[in-house]
Structures are given as structure tokens and as C-alpha cells.
Length: 513
Image (cartoon, rainbow, N blue to C red; front, side, top):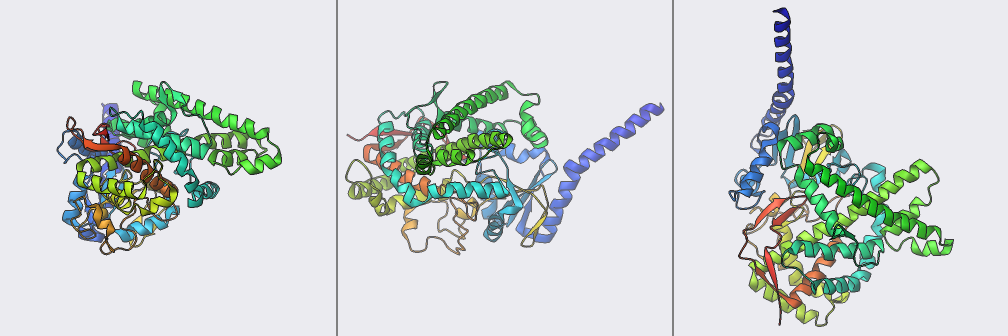
């Protein structure tokens, strides 16, 4: 009897402790914020992160106007809050809607570490996007010169050539995959100096397979509460704890990708080792891979060499994925809005044919494409692939203006709410690319309202390249194809790694005769 009573008391105490950490403690923190900010802070307690799964379910069942973020946009336009505060188990998550607080968070990036959505230590964690501190500064400095416009404009002929060649075999069955094939090959050739047209992995182009893996691994965290909690508790080790068949298959594909990329890196190391000093000096700044290999060869310590070799593999994967997927998704969104707005499509096609009469779109012609730039701006305002930028975790206690952030809290910069607010844009919910041809398209602008490529020191290093690619590829498509809606599918805007249109054949390209 005594032992049973002791066991019962112990069980009750254990349950009380668990409830305190996953329920009472986060509720107390949210109530404190509510008391401090009143109506400026909207709170919602969610056991096991129920909020995100409700959104996914509503989107899947077409109850959320086919957009996973619609509920948040509706709530913000109704309440005009500064913060939306919720929780995932014991962790507080604050979604920042106010541009002044967004500005403070983005400018003080050293308070945060970006959360890797794939949660795998061998893919993105050491690349430019997720590295931190001095390592990030070193990587940014090493790579920044190759993203300067004078360097990028030299790639214009190559972008035209790849686009025209790929368009001749364009597949309407999977538009997004076809676009990834184009943008990925541009990255492979221009930034890594790999001249082959195709590197296949299981009958899929390397650049497309990398994008597929990242999207599948990123989306996996939304499939069930159990998988999300497993990642939350165990981090990168979660992949090895009671893995599902799907997880095992993904990990096998990751091993193959790392092996292929590792071989490419080793080949470049061998090539550099056979060059004389003068040849190395000429080659070392030609592309990203040469820059990284040149730094690798300066290291004498074997352990440090092994760590650097792994960093190069992850930098390759990071830049390949970032340069392939985000730009391809943006292009896909642009094609969809062209299909939905045929008059705008004709106006911009006319502009392109007027200023770019030859087969290739020249670098000195691109600045004349004002309507095309305005169209891209409007797509980024309404359906940015990075609609919610990468979530950050606070690395220390700190004050964000008058908002006290505690170590371990999650921070989201929800600038998409400002992009679609009547406070800053007339008829904010309407697609109207001509707004960007006005002198002041943004009301009450503090330069942190419209941030399609983020802002602050850790803004997107590839923004100029992404825009250059987007203009040329869209220009080539519009010169050669009519873009029409696929009436046989129902579209929705979902989350994989990015915020993207689904399914992947929402538009059809019809050759202009």
C-alpha cells in the first residue's frame, strides 16, 4: 500500500512538473506580454503547436482561401497588433508585425541564430545562411565580391543561353521542376565553374534533386506533431531516433548528394594542386568553389582541413539550393500572375519586344524593362517565396526596444503583414503592378515596410542575382510563349521550405506561332 501511494504521489508530481513547463510557464509568459502591451499583443496558447497543424489542415481542405497565411493576414488587418505570441510546448514564439520592431531585430542580428528547417547537421548548418558569428562574417566577406553587379552582369549571355536551351524542352507537366532545372544550371555554371550541362542523381538533375530533398525535409516537420516534437527535443539527432521509412529514404538521398558534391570538391582541389602559383592567383576568384578551395589549401592542420572540406560541401549545397529553389519559385509565382492577368502579360510582352528585339536580352537593355520590374515587385509583395523568413532563436536575453526577449524564444519577422496592409498600400489585397510605377507606392514608409529580400546586415546576398535571372528568364518566356491558367487544377499556397504555389502545373506555356 505504501509503495503504491508513493508511486501515485511521484506520478502526480511528475505530471505537475511536465504541465508546468509545457502549459503553465508559457501561459504565464504570454499573460505578462499581454499585460504589458494590451491590444498590441495578441496571444494564443497552443498545446503541441496545434496552430500550425490547423492551418495546414484548413489549407488542404480549402477552408483558408487556399493560403496557409490567410488567417494571420485576416487577424492582423482586424486587430493591427504589434506581436502575435504563441508557443510550441514550452518555447514561446513571437511573430513580429510592427516594422519598428522588425527593424530593430534585423539590425541586431547578433542576438539570434537562424533555425535550420531541415534540422540536419550535414546539409545547411555550416553554409552562409545558417552560420553565425565570426564564421558568418568570414564567409560573407569571401563570397560578397562575386555577388557585385559588375561581376553578375558578365553572366547575362550565359543566363540567356541556358534559358533558351532549356525552354526548348520545357515540360508543362511540372513547371516548377523545369524552372529549377534552369536556375540550378545557372548556379552550377556561373558560381561553381562546372561546365557540364547535366549531373544526374537517380535520373534527376543534381540541382533539382537538392531542391527536392530540402523541400521534402522541410515539409516533413509539418506532417505530424510527433515529428515536430522529436525535432524540437532532439535537434539534429532526431533523424536517428525511431526513424520512419520516409526519413530513412531521405537520409539515404542526403548521403548520395553529399558524396557527389564531395567528389566535385575533391576534383577541384586536385585541379588547384596541379597549378603553379601564378595560375592559382588567376583562378582563385573565378567562382565560389575556387574561392573556397583556395582558402582550404592554405590550411595545414589535418583536422581543420576535414572540417573545412565539410564546410565547402555544405556551402555548395546551401548556395545551390538558395540559388535554385527560391528563384524558381519566384518565377513560378510570376508565371501564375501573368496567367491570371492577361492584360498585364500583353503589356509587359510588348515592353520586352520593344526594348529587347533580338533573341538575347542584353545587360544594357534590362534597366528599360520598368513594367517587368514593377510586376516582379508586386508578385514579391503578395506571394514572396520567403513570405515568412527563416525563424530565429534568441541566443541570449535582450531587449528589443521595450520588448524583453528571453534566451530560447523563437522570433518570426512577419513582414508580409505590412505588405498586405491598407495602412501601407492602397487596395492592398489587389494585384496591381502599376502601383510600383508611381512615385510613392508605399504609405508611411520607414524603409522597413517592403523587404522582399530581408534587410539589415544579414539580408539576402543573392538579391541582385535573383532579380537579374528573373528578368532574363521571364523575358525569354514572354518572347516565346503565351502563359495561361491550367483550369484542371485547384491552386493553393502552401509551405514546404518556402511559401509556394501548388500544384506544380498551375500554368501552361503555349508556344507563340
